Amino acid sequence: MGLFDKFKKKEKTKENNSEDANVQGWDAITNECERVYPNQKNPIHYGTLINWKLGGNDPLEGVSIYDGGDYWHFVTYGLSELYEKETENSDISGYGMEFTFKLKKDNYKNEEAEIKGICGILQSIARITFTKGEVFHAYEYLYTGQTQGIDTEMKSNITGFIMIPDNKLNSINTPNGKVDFVEFIGATDSELIALKSKELDVKSLYEKIGSDITNYNRESVI
Image 1 (cartoon, one colour):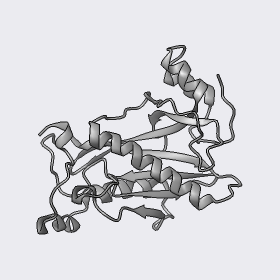
Image 2 (cartoon, helix red, strand yellow):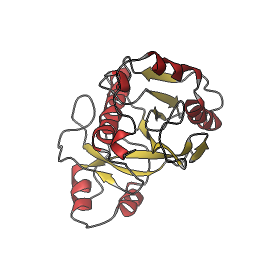
Image 3 (cartoon, one colour):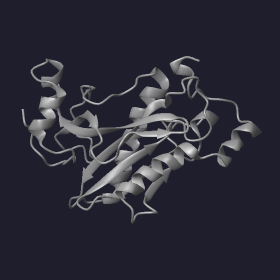
Image 4 (cartoon, one colour):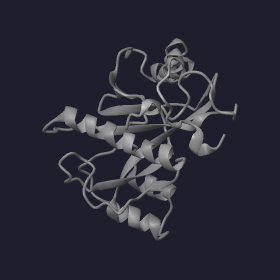
């Protein structure tokens, strides 16, 4: 089975409903999140109405958001195999990753809209993986040339992302294979252009930024 076939869309069948009986991959992610946030058994969660394999537009099955105190910690469900094992590679679960993101709490005009906005962005990035087979790794960057901010008002200097290993969630070995938590950190246009022109690498930029929590109001470090 090729990379592009991992989570291909299928016709709706009775067999697809059997996924509900086996949630070992889903539970493995939740268990790791609850290791970090033991008192948050019912975090904010935005689920997908129509499953990708049944023709839906959103590849992720859902995004959970944990309260990190001064930030919101987003964790995706759907890039790994959440239910039964479907792919041939027993070493990794699905694409072998889930996305995470930490958004600094602030005096947003509409905090719920900003949270939903990040969920939408994570769905869009996951769509790249599902449609093009691109796997995102730590110490890479995502630059699209976008100059508008990723916030809902599109005023932030943050226009793209760098990636690191999530520093709260450890990689997990699930019954379906290994899953790495790839954390996205907001980066400015100037920072991303510097990465593209190889003025510095992602690790160096991350050190300059000095935090893995995305702050829509921060100035560029380049």
